[in-house]
Length: 250
Image (cartoon, rainbow, N blue to C red; front, side, top):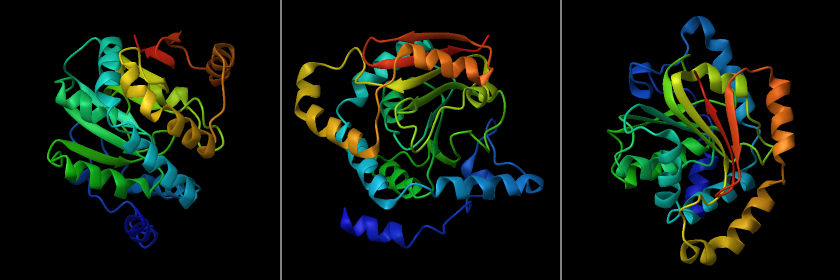
C-alpha cells in the first residue's frame, strides 16, 4: 500500500489526460473545449479529498471484494435488464466488476472521483483484465462530463452517508439517465450477501466507514433532500440489504 500511495502522491497532476476516444464510447463523452472551464472547476472540487481518506476508501473497496457478487445480484434485480450502459459513480466502486461477470450490461463505465482514485481503479481494471471492456471517466458528484440521456443504470454507492466529502445531486442523476433508466443510490451489503461473507469484514468495514465520515440517515431525511433538489422522478426507498434510493426515469 505504501508504494502505491507514494506513486499516488506524485501523480496528482495527471488530470483530464484521456482523449475523448479513450475515455468515452458513443454514449458518453467529455465536454468540448468550449466547456473546458467546467472540467477544471470539477478537478478543483475533486482535489478536496485528503490522502488519508483516499487510503481508507481504497482499503474498504478491496475489503468488499467478496461482497460484490452478491450485491450485484441485488442491484441487477432492481435494474431488471441484461443489456444497457452501466455507470458506477464515485470513490466506492467495485460492484460493476461482478455485474460484468454475471452478464448484466453491454457497456461499462466507472465515473471516478476524486482525481487520485483514478490510479486505484486503473490498477484494479488492469489486474482483472478488463481494460478493453471497462472505461474510466473522471467526473464529480454532479456527473459533469457525462452526456444527458446516456446511461441505463447508475450505481452510486456511499452517496447518502458521507456528506462531509460528497452528496447526491439528484437532478444530475436524472439528467444522465436514459428514459426508462434506473439509478440505485445508497449502500449496504445487499439482501443476498450471506452472513459468512459479512461477519469476517463487518467490524473493519464499520471502522473504516466511521473514519471516512459516515453518518446515519433516515428515510425522511432522504425524502427531504429529494424534495429540496426539485427533481421530479419516480422514487422508492428500501431498507432491505441496506438503505437504498431507487430512481426510475419514465
